[in-house]
Image (cartoon, rainbow, N blue to C red; front, top):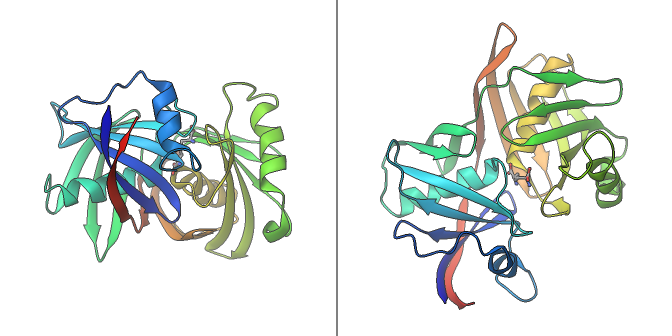
Length: 259
Ligand SMILES: N[C@@H](CCC[C@H](N)C(=O)O)C(=O)O
């Protein structure tokens, strides 16, 4: 089989994207998806995304982690597929697309993708961390000296430990820079390593920081290893609404691969 693909990155979280509007891609071939994401034997990516037709919106996003398994929402992947859909001429100004966690609206302005994320009304607060679902599950924890922190080793322990166990959680380690800026490093489930950025992760961090009173701003800057993201939201009652993930998304190269 020959697969035509595009490679995108959003603040260093990188994806193989395939235009599957003709249903040419075998979605159940976990081994092939894992191979395509392999950095030594394949193309190399944190995940693979299919762009498909959808009856009720401009397109559908189907997301797989680098381990080959379909997973929950990917925020950076969402921003990248919006840039890809614009490149394909699917929309001009604003778009609506279907993903595993429901409908998303998005726009591109000044080379930044604005992606509306799902509302968040449930936040679990613990003395050491927060846990919340922003489309994907996220553990959010403050650490000291984030720069030298062993994200892979410590993230792995939390991801596989109780209460998350095999189903797992993504794990975000955070350091406060100022009132509305936080540095974040994320261990990603399904990649089973640190990635350079995680969109649903920084969204979880921004909401957790506001929720815990660490920030009083509803627009929060997130410094990740691969660049800078912004998250804004409105708190209405106990629900975070109009949650917007904002940042760049770039096409890196395209090609075809035998697999
Ligand atoms: N990179 C993503 C998150 C992708 C899903 C995650 N690995 C999971 O399985 O929960 C993002 O940008 O949000």
